[in-house]
Length: 176
Image (cartoon, helix red, strand yellow):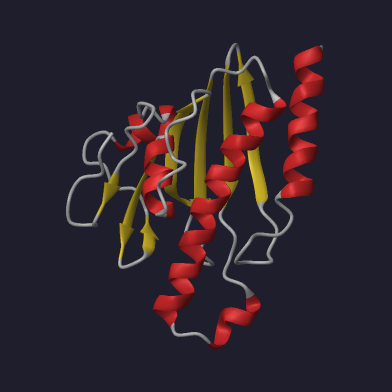
């Protein structure tokens, strides 16, 4: 029963602390939270670009949306381990929902409670990689994950090793 209360506290903390982003004022939309033994699964949709960004050029708007998604992923990772002291692993997935397409996985990671050495890393992209997130970043924009022959396995289980998140430039296979 205690774990149920801790998960409820996590959801409330996410709603409270993730209500507004640093770049986008749109709320984060939580899709799923699943607790299984010492592992938590969590899915959410990325925030849309801020309405005030509508006057920006498309690449700048896309870059802001991608940076916000990375900031959110790191913040959710930290919230999970702060709220749930018995959790050792978390499988975190971010989906982007476009108007006419089904949701696409743009960020994925199996992250551990162990804190990687990120204090001296100034690059947000590199910090996300060190935390264990896998994503494809092309021209500052998070692209849908395309993993040839393993997409279902990767999306279903989110198996990246801690500190081994992958970044792809779009022309290469996303790493595990």
